[in-house]
Image (cartoon, rainbow, N blue to C red):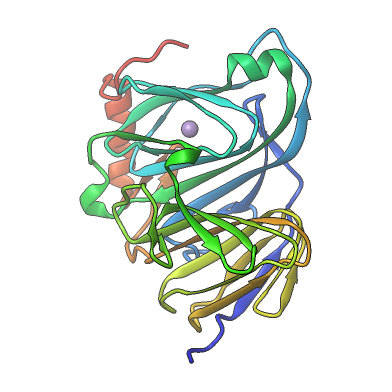
Length: 291
Ligand code: MN
């Protein structure tokens, strides 16, 4: 029997900030909490905790902006986001869906509340992750994976404990549909009251857990709603117990052991590559997207 993974910290959500006028996010890292490369390959976690938007005539969101050198992953819990990018991809991310966009060599994109959600308003709850790419894939052509809820892997927990929607990687024998460049697990777990989830991950992999609804006990530590657990790279086994219905996002992966150079929307290895990104953006190499 391997050891329980050590809980390093339970992080409370910091005061939120707005991304454009459509996303009210708590940044857990890299700026909210300075956790260094502890969560690599995950570089950023913005959590739009549950908030109510009033009906509007004009879509709220964030306008055209570039990315290079990594992937953005958007997980919709409540509400709807419409996405368009300069690689010609677009779609609406609805409750339970995930969008996995590889910016790679560079895209322009915009993210707004969908037309329907704009008109109706209502509860809105989202996660956006930035997933770093290793040097050999930073300039990979852009890619877009629209992962509808129905297409996610579904692992059923024993004793009516709930279900794990597998986005990437594998839970037990159930694989997720997302293609990733490095080994990553991303699971949207929906636990019933009394539900238990037990699994193992390599001790060398980064692991974190965001409690999106309800509260859980993980490896003996109580974690309230909207809190993020950072695990040390010690131990392999996880035991999650939900005393009430809970929603938990598990993110784990093999760390990328490379230098990081980041400025705004670019995530590269060196300062020179950042300068090149600005030059290429100015030269129109990220394509065209109407505002
Ligand atoms: Mn973006």
